[in-house]
Image 1 (cartoon, rainbow, N blue to C red):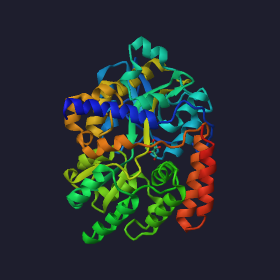
Image 2: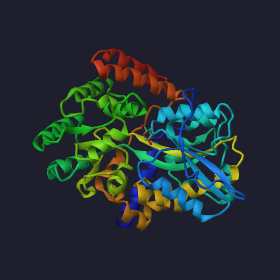
Image 3: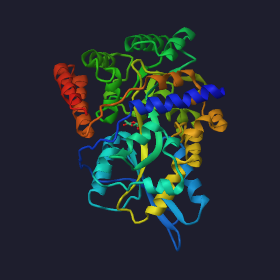
Image 4: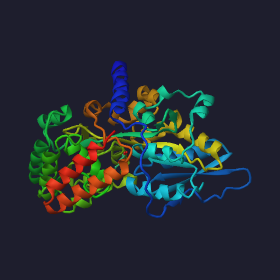
Length: 428
Ligand code: GLC
């Protein structure tokens, strides 16, 4: 990538993700299911002088998080990070973490937090502020992804560093889609209706079971997809109707209402879909067929903006205020959010780097082809935010229930529209 282009790219990423991301609002608390998760890396027990740091994070579809933890563990002999792998369902993980944190347990030292609920955790006092630690370590806020930093800033205090920023993308099979259509998709100048027409045509011409796969299960990903179909909840009625048309179309899976990120990526990477809506790290799975089992050649996959723009997402790293190994937790966060950890995440997992200088790092640009794609860069120009609210989890839950009910039955459109209008008018 030319220097000026990567510079523009860095600016675009910072400003657009900043513009679209949630801020430092206080959110409601919820508690829910029991905490669960498998612990990775507990084979060698912490002994003698080695202090164990427990990292509560969602499982990773790519080899990146595991590689980064190994690198940290091998880089020093004072600490050993153990990864408690949690669910990939954001809302469920939210409840699992709250169950643990609200009992003032220090069971997890480092927490991975979805950008949409970091403010809530900080407001509830579950996170340790990191401003002083950043100062002492000489870390500058501007070196990190602006939107992610803003999401982890509550009442002027910084609580988190970025784990990875996210943006919703359309992935498509460049060996199937014509050059003309590819150009149109990459420009972002197309509608969901046109996407549906292409999905139908290419699936039937190529005898592929699905034209388009995306997320419609009743969970946080449904709020994300409804946000995109309805153009940030501006065209609610027509957006939901289009979603219903897609749900009942014969070129989407019969069980699309049970599709989360995993189901969509499995269908696409095994050649069972022409188009897929997903997050950047999916590219990392395609690049690692030995691990993911992907049969579609990554060379035949391109990225493009979604018709109304992609939702901003991402995850943050915070320290449990009740941890008794805060120093070690901070050491690990600095590593994972800093140049070394972020380089591993970006090169091995195709994650967007949250540490800005890496956006101009040749090794990162050479190994993360996604960052160089025109369609990806265009996608960064049209990002959209989910509702920003003190009660985000509650609002999102109401949206998920109403939308899923409508999509399942074709009934209750008015109710879904009203629910969304009420919920989003509570925005701050
Ligand atoms: C991704 C995004 C996160 C979003 C979730 C929804 O993990 O990074 O922000 O809430 O998907 O499924």
